[in-house]
Each structure stands twice: as structure tokens, then as C-alpha cells.
Amino acid sequence: MTRPQELVAELIWKARTWIRELAGCDFERIHIPIEINSGQITKAMLEHLIHENEALQFALDSYTVQISVHRPAHKLFREQIQFKLSLKSVQSKRPLKALTVFTDASGTSHKSVITWKDPQTQQWENDIVEVEGSPQVAELAAVVRAFEKFPELFNLVTDSAYVAGVVSRAEQAVLSEVSNSALFNLLSKLVNLISHREQQFYVMHIRSHTDFPGFIAEGNRRADALAAPVEMAPLPNIFG
Image (cartoon, rainbow, N blue to C red):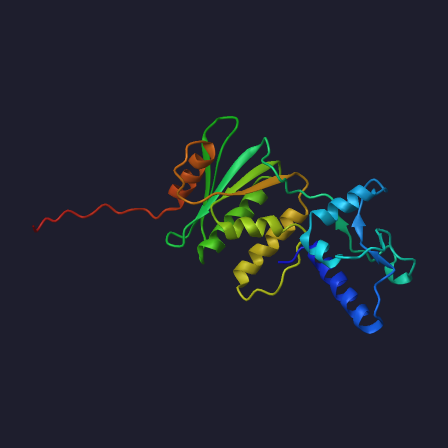
């Protein structure tokens, strides 16, 4: 899963490497396509984009000439064909004052769990589906259902570092080939849901089976319990 900023950074890095090898110089100008709504972009906005992306920082290292955010005057870059980096993201960097949704999954029970406390009734609600595959696939399925179910602002809490990482990189991402068709379908759905989302979300990773007090730990414990296999009571030994 590759973010657009990383694709642009890789292209810039390769182009600068090649022109140095072939011509012994650097570009006089580098164009970085940026999507803007106001029609204006400031130097501070461009610097913020570069500051937030390490790959762009490396790609533009020691570049001291001109960076432009406008299309070159060439028919190749006509209005109908555009690739733009967005300065806005639907992923918040801090928790939101909104609904908090917890996800979990179990490779043993195959349960894919979403749980949340209804803000109106203050009662816990659940969404549990059995999903075949690894715990990561089952929890990714839960996350996809969460984004389908909650188009409004919400916080997502998962105890899977893998899933949290995937969610944080999904916006406008480009997928590589994945041999697991179920995983590829889930990743495609997630990228589409997040990339077309209008309301912000926040994703948080929490260690599983955390005993800390507080609402987050309580919700995580509840998700753990809902995903756990049903324990069978031991049969009495009637022949003993």
C-alpha cells in the first residue's frame, strides 16, 4: 500500500538521480501537483506538505531551485488528465469529540467484532460476524464494516498494530498485488471508503488485554471478550 505522496517522492528522486547521471545537473524547476479548493496556495502550505512527509523531504534534499504547484504549459498536462496531492486529510491527528468504536477479532472463533456505546441510550451495541482467515483479515473486515456503518465523525480503536497501520495509510493509497483475494478485496474497500469519506476519523492502537482503568480500556476489554471463543463447561465425571 503506497500513498500518493510517496509515489510523487519516488518519481522526483528517480528523476533527479537520472538527470545528475546523464547531464551532471539538477532540474531548474520541479512541479508538484497539489489539489486546492481556494484557488490559492501559500508558501507555508507547500512547506507544511513537505514537512509532513519524510519521503518528500529525502526526494527534495539539497534542492535549492524552484518548486511549482502549477501544471506546466504542455498539452500532456491538459485539464482532463490530472494527478494531484491533497493538502487535506480526513484522518485526524488527535482524538475527536465523537463516537468511539472498538474492533477486535479472533483466529480461533473467527469472530470479527465491532462494539460501541450508543451516545443516546448509553448502552453498548455490537456487530459480530464470522470471518474465515487470519485474525488480521477478520479485524480488517471489522474495520471495513465500521467505516461503512459510521460515515460521521468517529474514533477507531484497535489492538492490532497491523490494522492501525493499514488504516493510517489507506487514504488515496495505491495497492500492490496481493495474492490473498479476500485480503485484497478488504484493502480495496477500505481505501475506497476512506478516500471518499467526508467526515474525519481518528485511529488509535491499544495493546490487547490492557488492564488500565478508563473508557478506552473498558471498550477494548469488551471487544476482546466478544471475540473470544465460547468456553465449554467441563463435563462431570459420573464414572469417578
